[in-house]
Image (tube, rainbow, N blue to C red; front, side):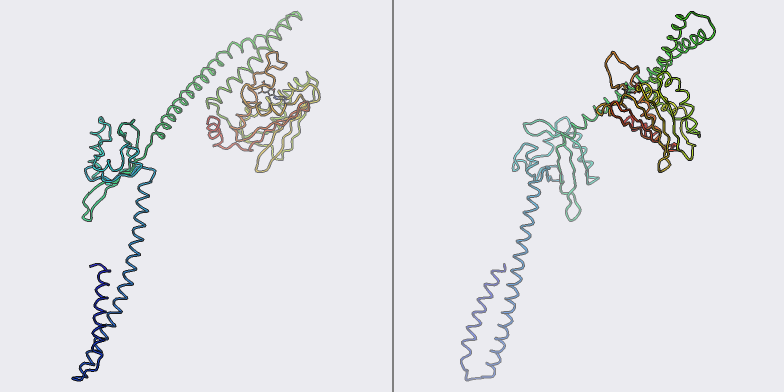
Length: 450
Ligand code: ADP
């Protein structure tokens, strides 16, 4: 009996009792006390009934509103299920579809109502069904499976890659009664994975090609150095120990200068290929930086003298000791100073060494030369870049010096920057930690190649 029926019957009983009460309220002559007692009891019973009825009605209302809330929730969950962007399917334990949402119907290209009753296996390509069946049997043991990648064969449509997440449904006796399937189309992900793999492969091939190229360059540079050293050595001997006419001497001198230029170029190529192939390791040691700057400048003085330029140094270090690769730091200094002299026609070059906070030092090479235009300055640290790239160049060089400086400085855990103004000179500034850290080289080498 439902609550409405109960209320109706209660109402009838209430009316009948009220009638009875009405009738019996007429004075009774016989046994008046008994009648009065009965009437009182009846009245009490009626009161109780009345209260019970009201309670029942209140409960009824609460029940109806709970039912409504339940229905709203059910609908909400159903809509979540039905409108979810991923395919949701419920199958029985044998894989027969019992429920499917819109996305699943769309993916399988069968309308929702016709999906019910079909085996999920129908949508697996025939060649893969055996494996799918075996996997399904395995599933019974593990209960839950994440991201199971399968191929789905929709009706009258093209196969696609899907990721299935499967969970078991049990009854109250813990017996398996079905499966919940979440199906996601991963075609795009698969395509990007494929592209990524291709790109990785290409990258590896490029890296290998770059390594081979660097190796080849390194070998070639070594092969070139040996005959060149002989040319330079013998022309020095010729100049020093033999008598020649002025013309002959001039010719031998040109052989010597060209030989030295070529050797410098080969050294640069060798260094560059080593840096490219991560083969250049710094050899740190403790040395006096002021001393290094002084001797290097003295070695370069003949060059500045040839152009009538001043070459000075200013050293503001309290502590002159540094821990770094002395030869490589000298190489940086030579490169920057040689450039400064090369690109300056009047005035001079100044090397300033100073201390920076956090135990760092700065070396600035300042010239009064031709300067660099703002548009060119951002490219000068890139390999083979020269500001004037015409073939009839006024200045010699391969455009590798600054690239090598930049990479060496980064390997040392420092930075190199350039400030310049056309026709008003340039300043190249190197900032370095006073002490080379063991990890700097490896992390920098990784960064250079990432
Ligand atoms: P290069 O061996 O050709 O000089 P670098 O890498 O040392 O190669 O320099 C690259 C280019 O940067 C140079 O060709 C030149 O155009 C410019 N450059 C470098 N240093 C200076 C400087 N001190 N003043 C003006 N231009 C400079």
